Image: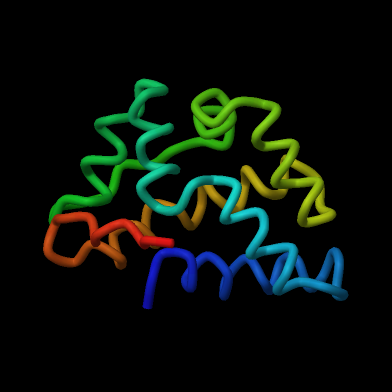
Length: 120
């Protein structure tokens, strides 16, 4: 199961409570905007969160991340685009990501390495 499958599964429950119609398309669009797992992690690393990302990809414990850190790394405009495409408030997107992204990345990288990027 990929990172995005994990996020879609958990995020789908949140989105279903907020915007029950059109969830698969909205979620797919939002996750695509982020540039895939490598894109999200690269943005977080470039935003000064390399220690957190390394802990999630590595085989040790996962360092936490806050919604504010995610927002600073991804940029307010990007977070707003994701929230708008999902039809839910940005604070809920950030809260979800801060809670679930570390474990989702950890789960997607059991050997301590990123899977190859998807090709179009």
